[in-house]
Length: 175
Image (cartoon, rainbow, N blue to C red; front, top):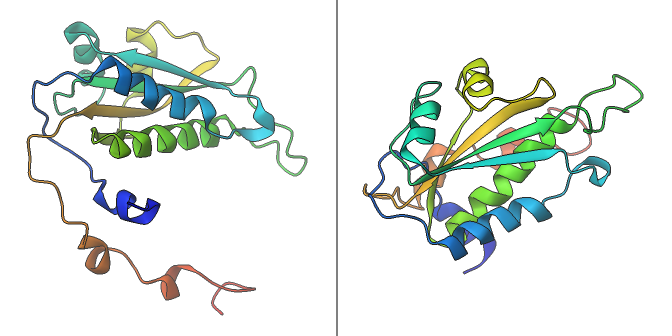
């Protein structure tokens, strides 16, 4: 299966079975995050792997969750993230954390592990519940597990996504 075919089979799972994720698969998912590109290769990501009932309940206190087998809290370490874009000193740690999350989400799909990317969560609760220092900022939560719901059709993109002509422009916006 080529990349686009695989990517089209990924969907946001909102119901999971009780089946645990095999250690080998979880390690491959984490390895995908490790090799993800980051600005200046500073690798500011910190990933908290949560599999215990108590840990998952802590996440559920900060976000709507769907009973996953595991969740990855993807954080950015603002002490080491690149901030030297000379025009505005943008902190790349948040972008880096999202690239890492994307790599892990797609590796999960390649391994037939389902996922849900959660960005709507209360970061203050996550910081408190997981005792994060000030410089470690939770950016994304990636739920992982084996869905027990019907997967969405890979044909959905024809109807649900805008055509390239509405999102891609050559040489200038609107052309």
